[in-house]
Image 1 (cartoon, one colour):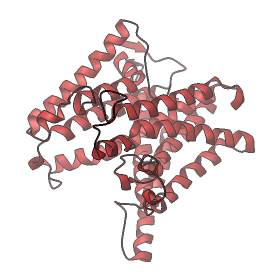
Image 2 (spheres, helix red, strand yellow):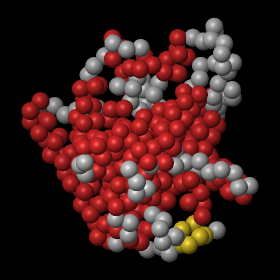
Image 3 (cartoon, rainbow, N blue to C red):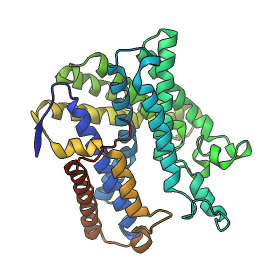
Image 4 (cartoon, rainbow, N blue to C red):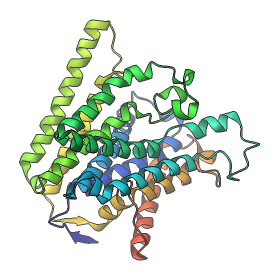
Length: 364
């Protein structure tokens, strides 16, 4: 059940990706099943779970960006010769296509006569797979710019993060459907009910790419406590920046938009994600072995994401649990169901490993 942590393996990334994917599974399961009468933010347990859910996607995207750029920069060749350029583009396009397939408006593939306007609206929603797909393309673009301009990765990636963050409130303030079709407008703001528009969500992938590049250029740094505390310091600095920024925003505008369209919210979440990552790196320093299940979960994030969504939400070709038990269970049954879903995902990845099927991650 365990395997020695390879000298070349970034153990904390395995732990981070495993946590991200399992946290995502339980979050979706509980969100679908827990009865509305139990969703009380005054309840400290629900408030803790709700707050944790807000960090699931940022952690997921941050770890995806870190992993992709780490593997990319391990190839000590120019951008044009790097085999991960083509692999990254192919993976990006496949993620975008799969994201739309999961929301396809008709089970017949080519017959659209009975598709309603509401079904088309659901199809055009930008979800996490499209976001990560475009995120990989964005990261590749930043890496290309860094090489062509002969400047540091770090400078370009930080600039890439800041551009997305500070364009966020501007983009959200524009009615993009006045200029583009809903299929395109959904990438620029949540106004068309997109779950993950490019602004601000690309910033988490770009921030992860900064860390991935640093790890590739400093291959043993993650085995030191100094690295963990540097991460903690960076996370704390971002949290401080978010709080100061909110104070300045209130002083200037007379109100806070922290929980809506403020860049300070992005800095806050990013600070929490990096601080959490520092904790994971400290845990990784204390272990000599890592359970194989965690490696398998990290290798199969894409499959886990797709399968658990199909089970919970359904697809054009099957009904989902949401049709039968949408927000109708008590907390005990909901938690039990979440453990069952996690167990099913673990069994699935073990079956894949046992029969030597090809592993699939979101970014490798």
